[in-house]
Image (cartoon, rainbow, N blue to C red; front, side):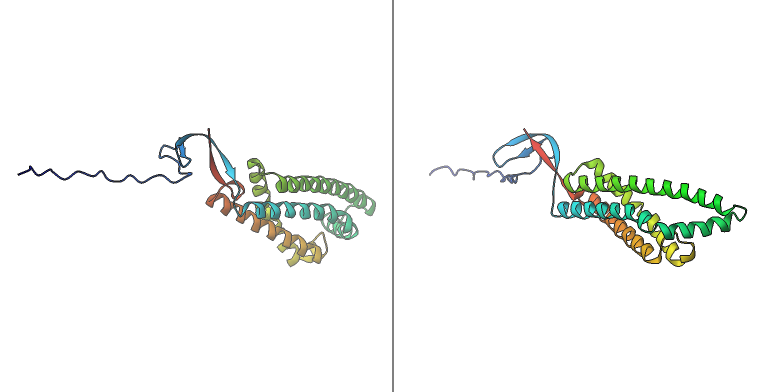
Length: 206
């Protein structure tokens, strides 16, 4: 009578890693056949990336054009409102003194507006073409500062007699500030949920 053999012990099956899976120590990635060492990481665009770049770039281009247009298109209204405010605050000034001070002030405002317009246009172009990390944060900060534009626009609309520009121009400025603030919120959410420019970090293997 033959001796009964003990049943063979079967080792539990080991689950194979999925292609693209990163090792627990973060140093290797499975390419479907072998573990390859990770040499670094890069940002890979997602479905949000290009729409975000297009929206942010277009906003800065439009805002740059508007910033350059305001002090020249509404120069007469700005001058009239400024004269009224200067005479109210400094009744001792003669008309010639008021006019001279206003001319200097308006020249400074126009020069600064042109500088900002050029800066915004450059930022818009680079935002459309590049996904630099530092540019993302610059855009986010500038757009976030739109909260001050919102407050200024609300003040101008609520008190039109003290506004430097006509009411419809104040409405346009307020609308642009609200759009910019909305883009800042979108960028912040994308950064938290995904990454810079809504991209995801992808490992680079040797």
